[in-house]
Length: 54
Image 1 (cartoon, one colour):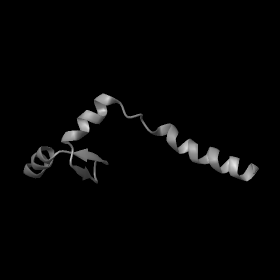
Image 2: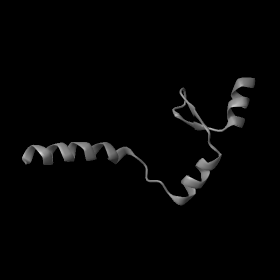
Image 3: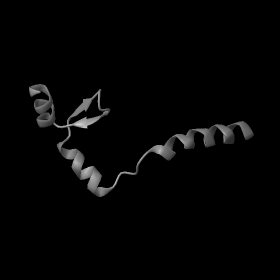
Image 4: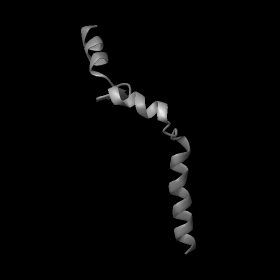
């Protein structure tokens, strides 16, 4: 049983760096559609068009 407890605590450490989802941040994501591999975040189609124009 001790092994299981150790494994559980190791998994929970991963979540320390994750920001909580708030109502405001969840509403902002409604406009986001695409994953930008370079920026490692979601972007809108308009952001994609702007970056393609440059």
